[in-house]
Image (cartoon, rainbow, N blue to C red; front, side):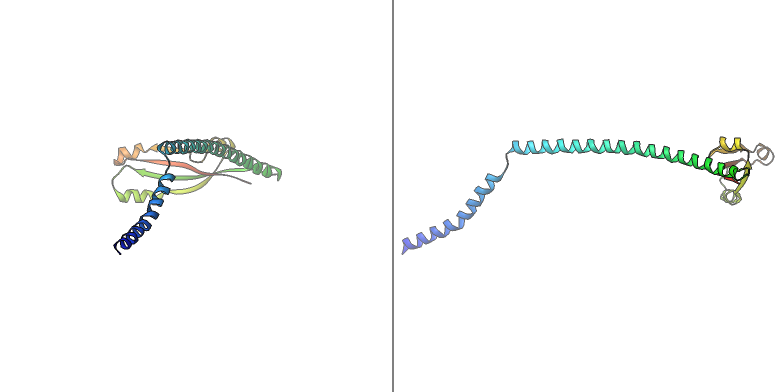
Length: 172
C-alpha cells in the first residue's frame, strides 16, 4: 500500500510539474539572443532615420511649393488689377485710384484716458490719388508718421500722427 501511495504521489507530482517544465523549455527556446535584439534595434533605427529624412525632404518641397504658390497668387492679383483698369478704359472712362487710409494720433503717456481717446478718435477714410502715387505705395505703408513738435513745445504733450494705407482700389 505504501508503494502504491508513493507511485500515486510520484505520478501526481510528475503530471503537475511536467507541463510547466515543457512550457519553460518552449518559452526559453523562443527568446531571441542579444545579438538578434541588437540587429533588430539597428534595423529599426536605420528605418527611423530614413523616414525622418523623407519627412524633412517632403517639408522642404512643401515650403518650396508654398513659396511658388504665393508668388503666383501675387502675380494673379497684379494682373487682375490691370485687367480691371483696362475694362474701365474700354468703357471710355478714366479710372480713379483710391487709397483707403487709417489716421490715428498716439500719445506717450501713462494715462489710460488719453489712449482710449486716441483709439476712439482714429479714423478710416478714402482718398483719390494719382496713378503714380497709387503704384508707389502698398498696403501697410506709412504715409505720415510725424512727431508733433508744436504740441510738445506749447502743451508739453508728446505724441505723433500716423497715417497708414489699409487698402487700394481702382474705380470707374
